[in-house]
Length: 203
Image (cartoon, rainbow, N blue to C red; front, side, top):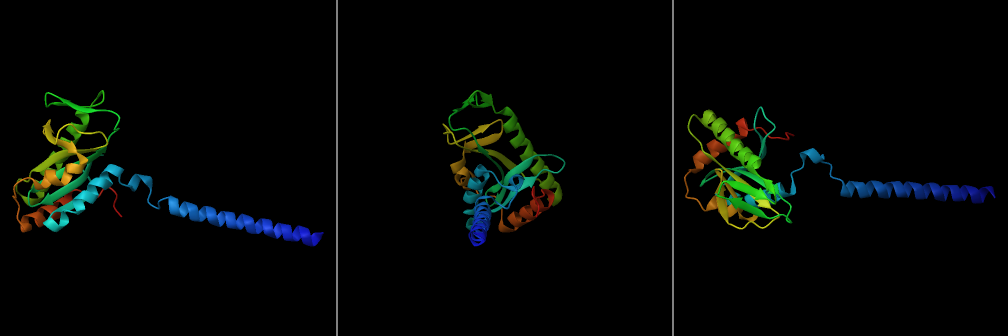
């Protein structure tokens, strides 16, 4: 009798240990080791993947850069032959339509997106000011809002001084402009931006 009970106990213990191991493996495979607050959003990852393809054409990108003294963040700062760009990536509810009024008001469903446009414009202006001071010459940073989710009923539209477009057009929006920077200028601006706009999530 004792042998039967002892054998049953050992089998139960073995099963419990195997269950714990299986649970640990499952969580290791399904839970990221990167804290949620440090992970890029789905929209940011989509834009980052597009911008990576521009590297072979001489473009350099900084991701998730903080504006010193604020809680604001530039999702992507791009420096390349056609200029300097601040791209904010947005994932919006695809069930709500996107519309514009008088080229001055952007709506997502019933929600006025003026604060989001103002934020994007302010972030680009701050980046421009910081980089310009670091280099001792005027550097313009073009603000934009790349929207994922709902269809955008235009290609590229400037609303309140911010270029607004579907997220899939990021590369075309950047490369369609005329070349204005040399390789040396691109490198200098990129290095300055790297210094004055710290990484939001430093290692």
